[in-house]
Image (cartoon, rainbow, N blue to C red):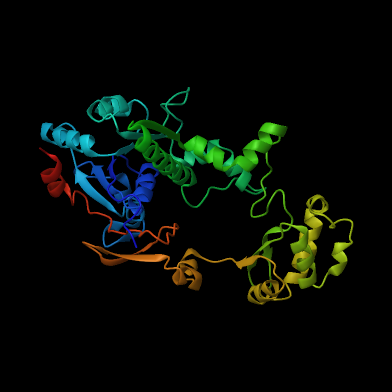
Length: 380
């Protein structure tokens, strides 16, 4: 096995909260050295987000900041500004997620940093982007989910629904990390740095392209469908005797197998259900008939039956169930790192799997843990 793909790449992480740290989390997992700058005393605000807290450490912070070194800097102190200058000169990438205008006031904007390092790849992540009438508005994930249409489209007839995780933040961070990889590749050819701009709103809208494209082409606003799919029937949670079960029937081949599994071959010739378009038009009647049958058996038995017939399905689990699932454990989906305060700590592994590269997992840092060592290395 060779070293991690980004071994030797240095990242100056000037971000906080979620979107920026998720970007640098991805880069750190791929082997980059990530030096996280935090405010002395308080640090990244996610250090205070909970519950849960584990012996005083925020699980929220721990989930986003492994593979990073923490350096506590006060930008008002001359010596700390000198250390920042040293980091800027030697780092390959800088990531920040302040509102537009704030980096300029702090002296960490793109134009200021690239004068010290012309080859720097600089990432600006914000709620609404660096231009436009909303550019200076705070853009937290909740606000973006509400404005994007996602909450309405994901809800039910009784009201909108919020994603259980910060979807806009995570998608923006993921998009930014992909852009960094492209910029690093381009710099190998040109030697030039780049200014990358990513917004939470545009990242979420792009991920919702199924809905946004349909709206652009037809002017139609997606109706809320809860756990069901607007374009495929059945493709949703279905009620069994004891629990709900996720069942996906995306094409006619699987529809035939599903009808066989439920003992309803007559549905294949029923004009209401013959094609997917027919099933969409008679959604309520079909789901009612399906659930009348599925309520006769427990969900585990339906999983066995549907698996035998090649019908995609899956049980409705809790997060605490899936992180202990045999499939996750079989693929080494849990990484163990040694935390200076908590000892051995289990974290979810990165979903990327390389055959010829290693993935690195190092502990999330305590606040300012690496200030001394980084100061010795970069303050000259």
